[in-house]
Structure formats: structure tokens, C-alpha cells
Image 1 (cartoon, one colour):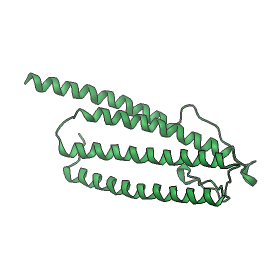
Image 2: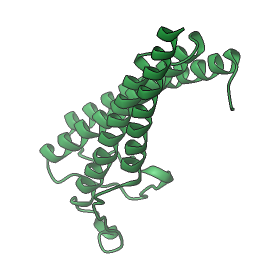
Image 3: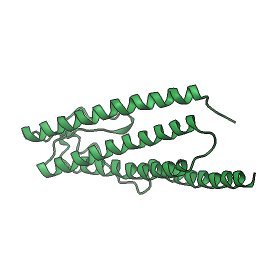
Image 4: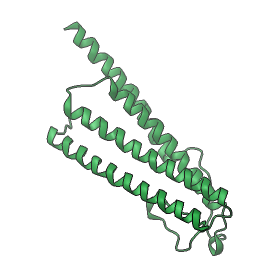
Length: 180
């Protein structure tokens, strides 16, 4: 059986803590940047794509309303990602301090599954908003198709099933402790 030592769990917890701090600073910086763009009247969309995909051309929003909608959805997506990291850090912290399953473990994994499910469709909505804007020279070259079941949604469903397994394991552990 694969297990991590307390030192390994503490190291991972420290790494996730650092990631949360840096991620929070990045989200704060992006918020300020988007606010400055809105005040200046420059409605250039800040594109955040998975797998390192980048546009060399800026995509401008058609109106202030669509720019604000995109910005709010982008910030909400980034905050959900930070919340996912926080829950993962919390799980590792709990595992390093206790023996066996705790009652909060299935709840945290369930919350992570729901957050991942929301992230999957929030990213889809971000892409829909980008591709409804004027892409300039790229409009004939690129397209986007909304997926009903993106990969992240499948991962979220796996997390939700895993949460049920841990819930059952916790119930068995509690029953065993009451028997002894």
C-alpha cells in the first residue's frame, strides 16, 4: 500500500500553502488589472486557456457589459480553483495529523467534486464568451464547440464516487471502533 510519511505530507501541505498565497496574489493582481482596463475603456480580454494555448492577437470585447461579464466569470473561476487547492491542502493537513479516516474527509472530497464540476462548465462558458467576440483575422481559423461532458466533469464525477467510498469506509471504521 502506498503511503506518505508525515514529513512528505507536511512538505506537500507547505507547497500547497505557497501555491495558495501566490495564487491569491495573482488573483488580486488580475482583479486590479481588469479594473484598470475597464476604467481606461480598453476592453481587451485577458485570455486564460488550458494547455498553454495563447493568442498572439488581442481579443477585444464588443461592449463594457460583455467585458465585465467575462471578467467576473474569469475571477470566479480563478477563485474556485483556489478553493479547490485550499480543500486539497486541508485534506493533506488532516491526514498528516490523524490516523485513519475522519468525518470531514468525505465532505471535503464531495465539495472538491462539486467545485471541479463548476470549474469544468465555467471554463466552457469563458470560451463561449471569447469566441462570440470579434477575433479579427483569427475568426475564420478558430472555432469552439461546447462539450456536454468535458474531461473535468468526468474527474468531478470520479471524485464524487470516491467521496462515497470514503464515507462508507468511515462508517465501517466507526462500527469497528464501537465493536472493539
